[in-house]
Image 1 (tube, rainbow, N blue to C red):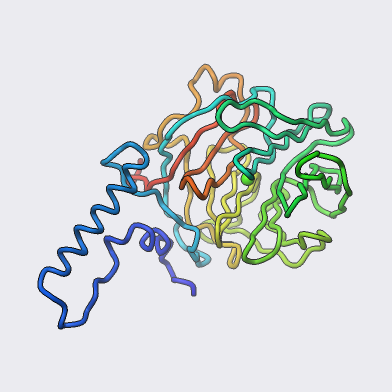
Image 2: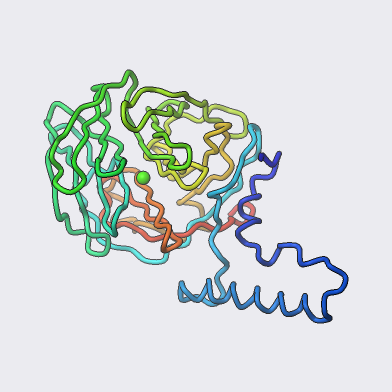
Length: 313
Ligand SMILES: [Ca+2]
């Protein structure tokens, strides 16, 4: 399944109806390839048209990508489609979407919370505080339950999705940073600030395995908020403007999104940046073919897509 030294395999698959080999049967009618080409172009225009920019290329889709250890990551840039208000007092540590709403876990002792948030307005529709003894971290939904990590307490809280009623607590031995559910694999993926990703049973939270994450063969630590997207995991890297894309089978990072690169659309203004903490929080909106990203104490949340970055850009 793996494509050695070809981090763009997923990219090629997605961008391509243009790159897909055409039919090869020799009896095909003349002009068939031309018709295919026109259909492909039309498809691309329709795809691009959904985003209101007829010149735009489809976003990079790495959901089915495989990355080999040692591969040089594909550099990606950010294209901003829209931005929405985000509570600037929310120290974002976990961010997911479900049923058209955001669910957010915020950190800091005494300020930690679980929230349901309207994506467009940023309005907090439901919120429960977390005891000040805990610093809340990553968040994920499993069926009708929400699982919220804590930083250094070795404890996760389990809530009812609708009422936020506290249902149970789960124990673990590491720090808690980010959490996402790899649906096809049937397990949770958890980060703890190290270079490890832990695979955990969604019901018992027992560790099922782990993988060391590497970037061009070197350990990548500080893996923070996570988002499982198909076969890969998007991870914020703490204290940076980067989001890395990891193949959890190998631990290899196959793409790096530098949200502060010159080729990326700007996110916060310098004024907004002055009172904000680091980038953290990524959500994949599958139906809309876009991601949401924000940060700790960020006043805005951004709808974005990712494109290959120009060399050096
Ligand atoms: Ca997430």
